[in-house]
Image 1 (cartoon, rainbow, N blue to C red):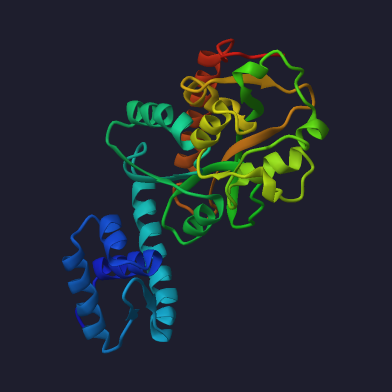
Image 2: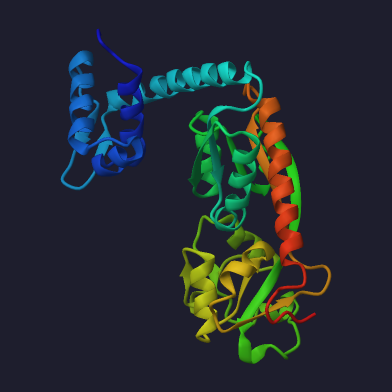
Length: 310
């Protein structure tokens, strides 16, 4: 087993994760033929087949699955060594890999990235937007340094830092702006449009309405808040969105925004990272900047929610 390289290990991990040469090559920022060549060289060095290649998808062989477990641990240890090196320097520098859920990323991250780069000009920020289960797995595997998401996560291996809380607001068609704001019981009788399965925001909305699962007649599971708001704008139902999303999502749709009476639905946003991370102190500093970004956005939108009804 000569000539094994860390680069090959990372290419292998990307291919194992994506199950597709094209997507894995994009993730690694190389051409598909170059990735394929590196995987073949790795298999040749190991004298074993790592992937079963199908017409549309590839999958790990039994040997590949065992190999993947060991490679992930090697990559995690190497990344922790990189974190240790970065932590030994003054200030935050080099690469910072931040995971964030889709109901936060478009609204908060532009300000967060601006604040981080202003404070740390040499910082190379990589943002990974995906659902909570994937973020926690990637954080545990060492593929990201930290994640911004809804708490609690309650994972003993992670440090959780609460940053801020925000209310959910009701989005309904603009012709309904003067109607009374429904309570959770009334909302259950409406056509409630929700994000698709896997989004924690979907579960939070269902919890507020005391609904165990979405009913088939509701008719739409959206992949983004933008889709839901646009569907409300053409009269297909109502939806809930987090307050931070209002300035972006409500400006181009024929909708009205209403606040719920107390107790209103809400969520707590926080950051998590591995307790073993050498970057723990630096990530604590990053959490302060994220909180400042959220405060700045909140002040900016105060009193500016379009069509708001108390």
